[in-house]
Image (cartoon, rainbow, N blue to C red; front, side, top):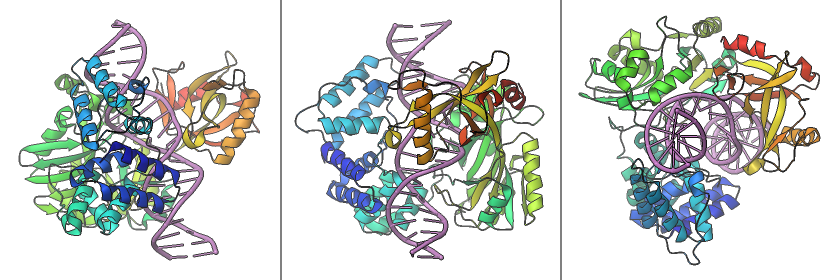
Length: 509
DNA sequence: TTCCGACAGTGGGGTCGCAAT
DNA sequence: ATTGCGACCCCACTATCGGAA
């Protein structure tokens, strides 16, 4: 199959807004692919690379050679070039990589170049990724979508599942089983503003657990072999030796466990997320780092134990199995109750101990890998501040033509100026985007055709956020975590905005 | 006919490791 | 040594489609 066919399909998919017609385009393309190319076609058309990453991003694609006049690239050839580019990473040879990228792009026609750029920068923007592709595979293979989804959850790779679906149909899909040592897509949680809203979704009784601000891990043990995966199924085993040792000490032969690793202070309170992320992200000198910043692990689910798959059991049954295999000190603190007041108290206690919040879980929920079902609902406390808009950036994609990303500042009473605390593009409706674009252009103090448009600091906006973190980037040394717009405050003047001291008090440093 | 679940898109801050400067 | 870049940790929120109710 030629790359140009994939590029054309992507264009057609992007051109239709309906999901059913996207599915039709994708299924038609998959039907034309040779068996040996199906996996690559699925990967590209759902915005992935079989190599995962090859070390080429936005900057490496700035200057491209002139496009070819005639399409000639095959999927197999492109895949092979990507392999070779990836093999160059870490060898100190940027020039060799540059040469491979240039060679590939010189052989690509203009539409093919556009497609490759979008693919490599992770911005396919065709309105179809895994979800739509799952339906397309089902359509192309003539099997129920539920069976494709089931296989995807167990196998964790859509190209692998799709290739089997097209070659062997439903029978082939039924061959996918949980395999210890191979990661599954982790189950995700919805969110709710309040404990009461969370209980609405899950029903009662509900299990309520601490939500720890660490890194999600899926740990596999087969005999003396332990492998650790992150939420995106990257392998991090060598970076978390404490976790490996803890799992090897469990009285089990095979296990797949779901949990969170986190750095705790000696008093048991959590370190800031940055400390945990730095530890988990470090590959070098791990033995020394673990002395200074040891990691703790808290498990909250078991997907497999000693030969038995637990995915389809209700949550309570998985908990019973987990409690038998894991000592209580390694279990996420949890309570099961129908009493909303008790849930409230548990939430308050978790937050008082420095944790992020709680997860409220339905006792009957099976493990829905890769789904964001109503079986698990997270609740976190929310802070708000009234801040001043200092500048705005033009949006991309569906936000093109709107001033989208706001620069936010807190009042510094000593100078009368404003200290920038970060940016946000979240929480805006299309109507609000249109309004703020018009209003901000009136306040602009610089050219409106620049990417960043500075404005007179007059608009006050109420911002919700999860916390304040230390910032090496912003002048106040602080930045807001997960900032989003709640509403504009036309009733407030900029000199009534919250001050940097208020932010410092929340930060505690 | 209306409602709502699932998805995709639009970007945020921080850190590590590598290569080039 | 410093800087730029890619990759990956954490993520919230809105618009939209189409099946469920």
